[in-house]
Length: 230
Image (cartoon, rainbow, N blue to C red; front, top):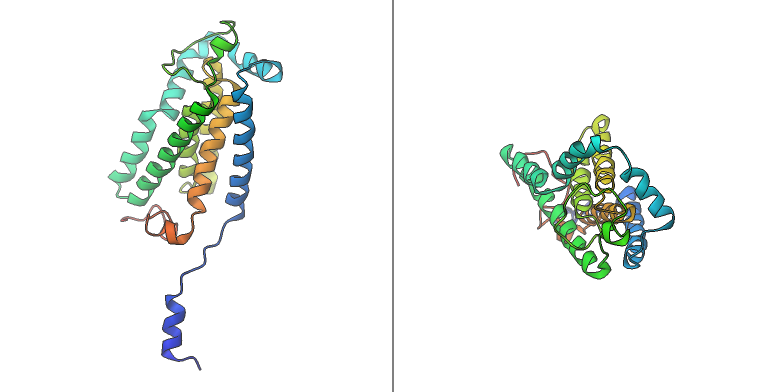
């Protein structure tokens, strides 16, 4: 019969974290996609199949311009970031708010690093103006799409707390945002693919952090994200 000391010793041992297969696969796939997209973005070319896909979306009627602008700002800019964080804080879901901060912040950092590496010009430059430009973008570099990167990070963080029957909303968020960026003429298909890869990569990295790191940072899921408190 085990002694009291042995029982205490077993209880004090750190819990071995199980690494969910979907997140391991997501990490590997997103890393591969990002690496490939970065190579393409660094070539500063918009031709072939990518140009065909770009023009197919970009040539949609101008009637979609206003909805696309609303989507791009409402799902991938500062407004939804603030909304997600403030709503979580308002309902005292501090862990959820913190996870939004970490994933969106991480996606933003990786996006900026990738932009400095690729230095890809906007589609209007690569196509010499032969497109429908429906939005004014301040940044000069195109790869990756920052809107898609942070939008994917937010959508996949929301995935963690949505009931299964509502998780299609996260998928729709990512897809609709990507289409809107290409339709507006401010990003190539490769740009939004790279942005998606960054968002997915960050979410997977946070989910796969060792417990010795995740626990002190309140990034483990041992306590549900919708529980009150931190």
